[in-house]
Image 1 (cartoon, rainbow, N blue to C red):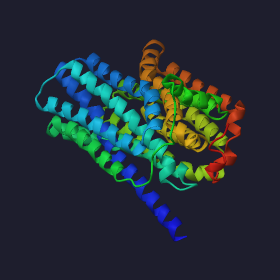
Image 2 (cartoon, helix red, strand yellow):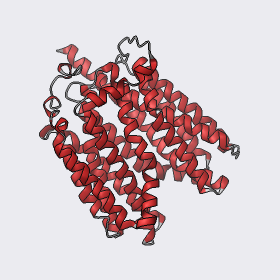
Image 3 (spheres, rainbow, N blue to C red):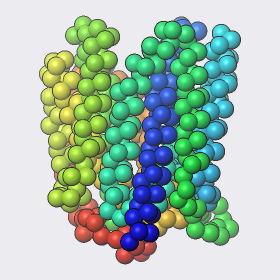
Image 4 (tube, helix red, strand yellow):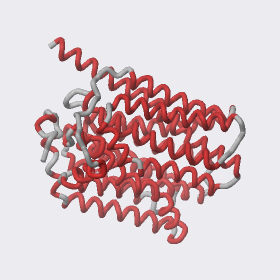
Length: 415
């Protein structure tokens, strides 16, 4: 009994280390996202170059999911996290030096963006795959919800912190970004739980890279969940741009836009914290269905273009989003063998992040060509279609029995 208690305490300590370090890193990264746009715009005066910089970073993050998953499954995950953080710290440091010298070289900026995107991807997948090793049985959903809420909290606090630092000196948010990576590397290096993967003997790297996609495709829950996830990300990211368009069209000040987005991120935090309690009483199928239906209802509030209703609707949309994000992530970790978790997570990540890259562009084109009301109506219809698909997807109904507190060893090698 004493040994089990000590093991649980050690696991909580290790989870706290990972969570805290990555919280600091995500705070720095969210701030960097604002600071790099401000600095590039100040140096070039070109919104197109700002967009190019952001696109390269997002594309690197999206496309690196597959090789990152392979790395996570073929290396010690603790060392992988530390290495990714140090790589990010190095890239961020070179950028801070460039900002300090008031120098601008586009090739360097784009290279740093690509490296940062890859580092974020590897770090995120490694931490996700390590979660079952640092939390006890029955605590995985709560851990995933805390990780999800952490992202919303960083989105809430990072931008205002970055703008305040940038106002004092442009180099400060970039230097803070580098320090945040070092902090995450330090906390990850202090983890004591063994995070090594099983010994693998993959002679064909190309075949091994595809194992995650094959596992996801063959799993009756993960296959439809991946499609629903891609749809949800596409709609949510597109709706964020539509909200900004609505607010600016009605003459809202920049500060008002910031408050609206802050309210939405706050709602996302609340939604993340609610998931563990809801999952104790409702099946994964119910949670996924409710998240899509609630999201569609929330989006409908934005149709008329009223700024207050649009802000409330987008906030409710972000509050509903964790219902599927946490449920799908926790389920993937539960049903996937340890030696495949990185690649399965990478497969799901690629399917979800590619739509995220193009969602703002698609929503912007629709808003200009068809108008805000029609764009919101199309996004709402997409979520309703996803809701109907979820109701009919048999694989989504088969999961709840092994999510609600059972030992994952009984199904982790599910054929």
